[in-house]
Length: 253
Ligand code: MG
Ligand code: MG
Image (cartoon, rainbow, N blue to C red; front, side, top):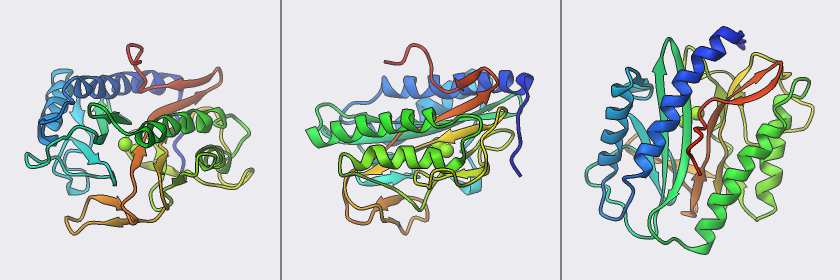
């Protein structure tokens, strides 16, 4: 069942969203060659806890980190480790959630480590823009399929593909609520969108084919063809007055 949020609840979700967005910015400041993904995870956890919030992902379904940190052909759910060291030219995906006041925020970014390839730059830019294409379709009267169609149509222009095995979702008292928000879809199909919906819209985009595989660690998801993958996510509320991007913080450029 889709849990609609009233204006008081959406206001409360702004706080969880702000902390989530700020945690990503704090992590970004630490990205450079030689830094481990565990260091990034620690910085994120400490920031969230200093704000009086809790990392949403820590212990969620048994996940051992506060953030999912995935490098290059890893798509999502990378486990932070002191043995995973960022290298010049990598792209690193950081996916964070923070909970406070009974609500969660959920947001992900893909950051370059030093100088990256033109292909990586193009992938990161297209993935970010595909999020905004999806948000533009997040309007009362539209349907879930309109969001996914907008995302996939955009990235296909670049020859990229969307991951189909993992999808966006509702956000609220739980990090993952109904409905599913695929990054593909048929216009006019799926649940109808209306004010009070809060969705994590999160394109996962591959340079190559859309197929992914899960590693034997039980978590890390990689592209099957080893091509680069990028991720861009925000928690977005639809209100009577339009969209509120709950996890986008103003200082972000
Ligand atoms: Mg996320
Ligand atoms: Mg999510």
